Image (cartoon, rainbow, N blue to C red; front, side, top):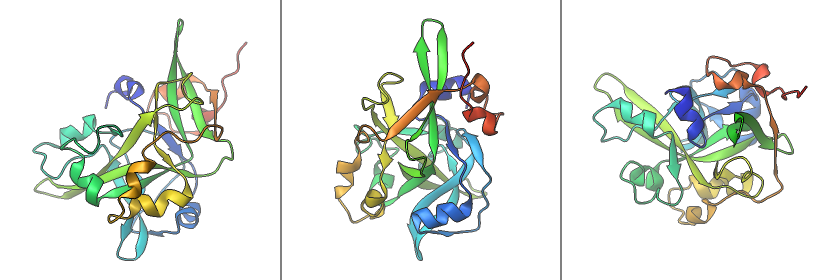
Length: 229
């Protein structure tokens, strides 16, 4: 996906710098045939850890960001489905089936948004004030290309809370640990009440350098504060 397109969407970039051991402990999950390095600039079409309910309970799997519905004729549709709007996710053909049967958690420790000003767009890094891991509400799907089975996911977004409104009018749906089971359980209808903005006061943000603008850059430099002169 063109990085300029990713900047328009919310959420279009995020970070996951914690090691697999920390992910397993936080999500009480087992890792299924996957590796994970510190990631400071995750972009659409890349494979990253997600959490779903498997035969052994919660499982960590590597999946490609950009949902390809099982009925799709072309994998390219995934480039347009990196986000699903909470307000309409239940009625969109691309997401309806996954919403009922394939909900997932998308581990993260921060995400990015570009604040529009008269001088241009300036990247901001957004994270929990506590610095802890958290999860986006996500959906996943399996698609048979004829040569392989591709597993892909999307991140659900909602209206921004007051913490994020000065930066962007939307934000990803962020789930607290006490919400994980309700979101993952396919038999639970309570998930609808979770598709809302995060409670105010839990997030922090600061301006960063434009290193993050390119998805080719994936180092700690992406989250360094911008120093005004």
